[in-house]
Amino acid sequence: MSHAASLSPQDRLEIVETLHFLNHVIDNREWDHLADVVTEDVEILSPGTEAPESLEDMAPSTTLPGPAGIRQGYELSQLAQYGSVHVLNSVIEPIDGDTAVTWSRLIMVSFDQRAVGADVVDALVRTPAGWRISRRVVHARNMLREPGRQGGGYVPGPYTFVHFDDAILRAQQSVADAGIRRNDGQVR
Image (cartoon, rainbow, N blue to C red; front, side, top):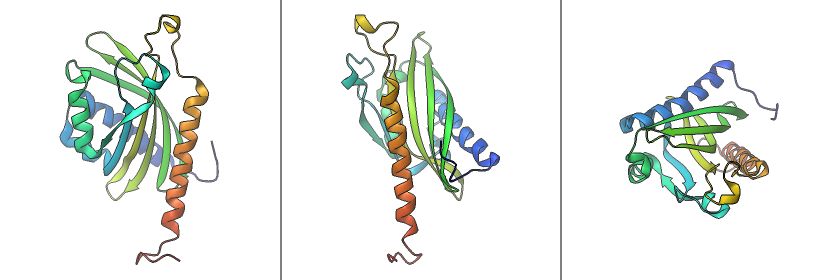
């Protein structure tokens, strides 16, 4: 973790609450509250299948753009058939006072007694209404059905570290790009 930028304890609490509230919105299907946790132009990338057979199947390949895309993606998934409970813990990497990247370990338990794990990398930005998720990338974990991986099918650690690092670099570049523009939109 870098120490160049820092966030107040209040900011860290609000970021964690934003992540947790998104879980409540999804689990309770309270879609009208998506705007309370994501930006209007949010992008969510997730694995393209709910039953991966290979590491390639586990890679994020489906994009859900905006709150409407998030809702549609969940309603079309197997999650729509069963209720679910999403639980996560998170590490927060501040980019600047208004931008942060989180890496969360997520466990989803569905009411048909399945448990699914994932690593989730979120980019969050401070808005006038509070912290909002602007991008989420979901990396499936422990889902392979290959016999040789049962009980130990996982995405190797460096795989997710690379995506966490990429998210940090992407957020840093976004902040840098915004910093070279004046209020009138002219490049300095």
